[in-house]
Image (cartoon, rainbow, N blue to C red):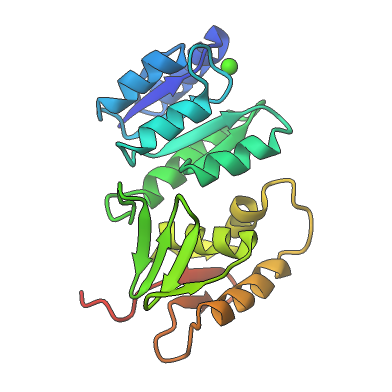
Length: 230
Ligand code: CA
């Protein structure tokens, strides 16, 4: 597994390289956004760790340009309290983010999870749509249609649906959903996830016979296409 680190702080690059190599990953690094984007475009990497504050081209711009060509998994490395960065980053296609300063164990866990959940079956298409059955999401305009009819969703309902879709056939825990959709700062009750899933099911007319959002009792939710033939 090759990992590309795009990060301008030499200390962090050295530390991350050592730790990741110790875990058995091959590591390359770039210290500015422009070189990092070029390297990322080679397609040689299983995952990219992308710092947001970078010289020449910032991490958001690197991600935006990269996503036009590639679905390679990206974990954004953001500054503390940069809530908008996290939200925007996920919106433009980051798979996950981690906030500085972080524990290496947390980063390693996130890397494992992103690698696991973004195997080639990941329904990312360069045209920027995600779909399951007759439900279609257009990422750039955040538009949702079912059987050709436009469905209006709130921001949170949309984020929830997109997150479920990007991870189809993978059981997501309430905590995972909370941290991705509501952000790590959210300190409320995880029942909010159940409430929003209920809203979402109503909005997308997710009826019993062909239900795509399944409840996994005691754990969370998974999105599956039951009409698809294996
Ligand atoms: Ca930086």
